[in-house]
Amino acid sequence: MKYNEIAEKYLTYLEEGNVDGVISLFSENGIVESPLYGLRPASEFYRDLNNDTTNSSLKLDGVFTEEGSRRISLLFDYEWTLKNNKKVRFKVVDIICFNDLNKIEKLTIIYDTVVSRKLLEELKA
Image (tube, rainbow, N blue to C red; front, top):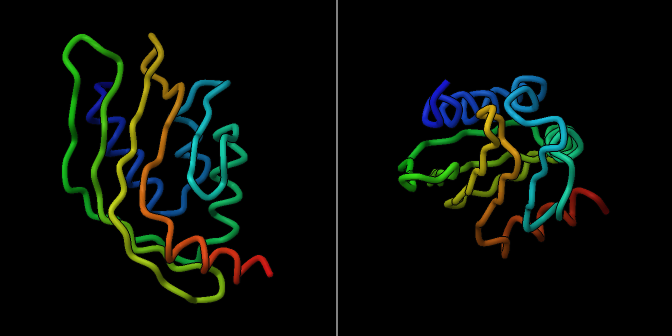
């Protein structure tokens, strides 16, 4: 599977809340670095995210590749509805690093957390 195809599957699985599908795209030791959840094994991160989420709506805005590397970046709009039914919308950049088997080794998430951090703290209180 090509990197762009993996990226499309990733976004589809994420929007569907298909945790097992998302995790299947990662290597056994795949990790996620998130501004809200920190550096975590992918399986833990996506299970925790799913537990905090009622709904996710994503709209892809671009896929950016680096010739000769195993890295791509995704730009997308994310509308996140938390379990307490509060919503937040933000632009996200995901930087995805693949291993030589085309599995995600590391995914770094970049976005403005001003509103989302407050809402997640309210959910966890």
